[in-house]
Length: 113
Image (cartoon, rainbow, N blue to C red):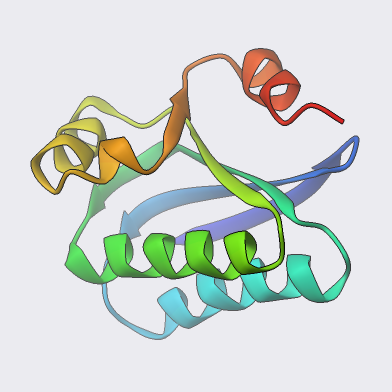
């Protein structure tokens, strides 16, 4: 799994690629959420367009990130969830927690000011 971070306005865009499964890389994802909050950025867009698979550990880290950002008064939104990942969100009922988008500009605008 690879992690790519970039700023788009006041939103941190975190792009993941590969398999999001248990292991030390998940700590890096969790740290990326915490780093955003520590640096005063509470709006995070998580791009999952290049994720080939995600297990329950991966889902857990995303839920943890959502909690971290919510407590900081911010939000975590999902961009480009693949069909497999979208189905995982539906099965686990996480689809009711996350705002999901397929268009980056629409997702960025959804954070408002």
